[in-house]
Length: 89
Image 1 (tube, helix red, strand yellow):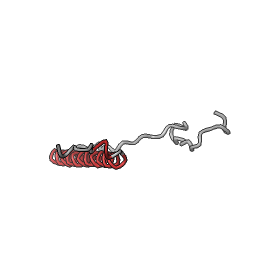
Image 2 (cartoon, one colour):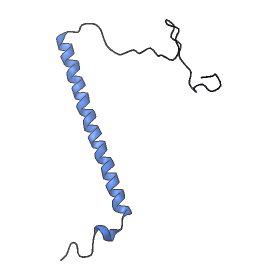
Image 3 (tube, one colour):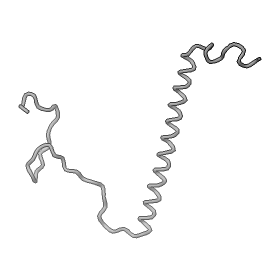
């Protein structure tokens, strides 16, 4: 790419390799060996966080579905939903 038609972002130059455009990826992994009980505690905490996250996702989806249903009920013709004589024969 020429300089005038280049990307609209700044490229990052890696100091060790001198190459542009490749970002250094760092993961948040501890390399030290942890005590067993600490690992179990962290795993239980992560499972609890995941459970709460999934519960909140489901609750949010139900809210969105309810909002869509309410919007649909108010926007549609009431005679299509509640036909004459639907509740009394």
